[in-house]
Image 1 (tube, rainbow, N blue to C red):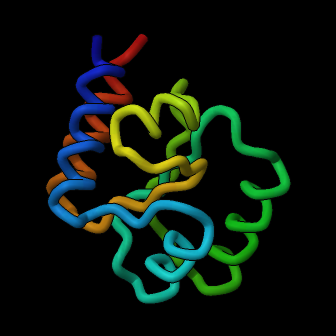
Image 2 (cartoon, rainbow, N blue to C red):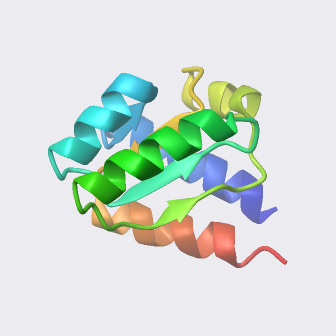
Image 3 (tube, rainbow, N blue to C red):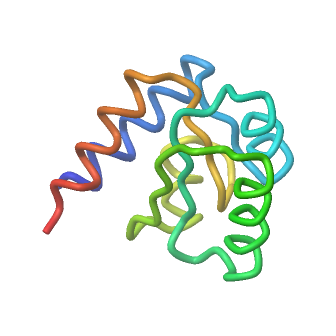
Length: 105
């Protein structure tokens, strides 16, 4: 249930223009310090996660990183765009999404 709410919130953030979806867009949001949350889908590669982690470490970027039980297909269905990496570029959306995804047991 919380997963569906989180996906709905991601869709809302997408329509509000507060998401950067895909490798290049997310990396750009991280570098420009626009991102307040980084989300990897559960089916992204370890290589991608490691690459982004190294970049964040080198640039001293400190923000929450989540790897919820959400697939690329579920992101595509809720946001209309296939992406394995997403940044949320709004503090309020980020807080709500974090609370929804961390409430799951």
